[in-house]
Structures are given as structure tokens and as C-alpha cells.
Length: 116
Length: 114
Image (cartoon, rainbow over all chains, first blue to last red; front, side, top):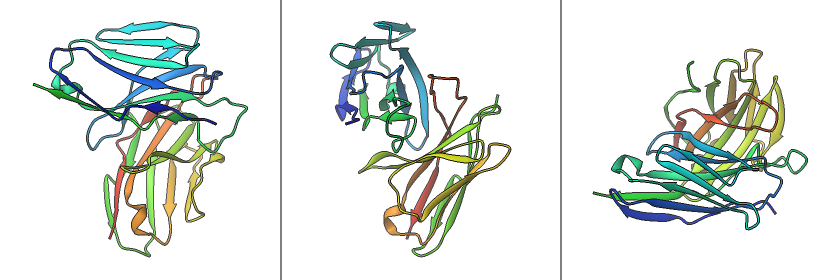
């Protein structure tokens, strides 16, 4: 079935790198996304990767995609206290598949805690 | 370009009442999706509207309904509120550019049912 798995919690020290991992199930996903949610706010699209890419870098963010293992990761370099938030990965729903989960299937979110 | 706007930001209701939440998508976006977010269940898909038609629906009871207007603005309604309906309700719009289903979220409406 459709499922996106993430670890629930990650704690790092300010200045260190953070790596948030995600596994997904739908190999037909065209795009995979990372969203960030700060307390009391909606989800902010952080970055995304097209499924035919292995890596995408955007300033402090690096996304790695391993299609064979259906594994997606988000690396945040030089993590700052302002990066403390919940991070969600999401995959595109196969347009020919079930539609009761909406356009995107979200993981349960990883809470990133950055200690000063 | 203005982002997705949700109103109201906070709502307090009592059991049995009904509530209507509003969402204005990004200009030019024609698809609007609604999600319920709770600490225990995470993000759960409610429904999606496109061109005033409901395209997809999640596994929620009939007390949850929605609609979309010709200007793409959307409303969702919850009737006969229950304590378990307390949640952050998120609206998201997308441009529907064929295969790229980026969702842009509003800040949400925090509903508390007492």
C-alpha cells in the first residue's frame, strides 16, 4: 500500500549537519518533496526533487534520492536554531491509483530539535 | 503574489455546533485541498476541489463537507462538532501543472471544540 515513513525525532547541536531520512513506496512518483512546519504555522515547501535525479543542492539543503531503495534524505548543513521545526517528506500520488489520500502522501513528520 | 489565505485563524466551538472555514488560494491556482492535522494522526487528507468539483475525498464522515466557488475560493464545513474534531485545518492550493503537484499551504485554522 501507500506509505511514507520517517523517524519521529532528531536532535543536533547548532552548527552540526542534520540528516532527515524518509522511505516511500510508490515507485511511480514523479516528484518528492520536503516541507517544513514551524510551530503554529502551515507547511512551507522547502525543496523538491524530480524522480530522475539523484541529488539536488539548494544553499544549505541537499536532497539525496535512492530510487532503488526508495529512500529520500534531506541534509541541512550548519544547522541553526531557526531550523527547529517538523519536517515532512511527501511523494506524488500515482495519478492512476487510489485517490482517497489526495495529491500527495505525507510522512508523519520528523521533529528537528537544534540545541545551542 | 499573495499566498494561501485561511480565515479565521482560530475558532472555539462547542460540541454539536457547526463551523465553516474559508480558504483563498494563490491567484491562478485552481485546485484546493484540505487537510486535518492532529498530534496523534498527523496530516490526513479531507478533500480536493478543482473547478468547483470535488475530485478526491479522504476517509472522513459525511459531517465534513466542502465546496469551491467560481473564483477558486473554497470553504469547508463541519456539522455536529465532536471533541475529536479539534485540530489544525490546513488548506493548500496547487497550479495543477501536470505531474508537478506542489502544494502551497496556508497557515491553517486552529479549531478547538469544547
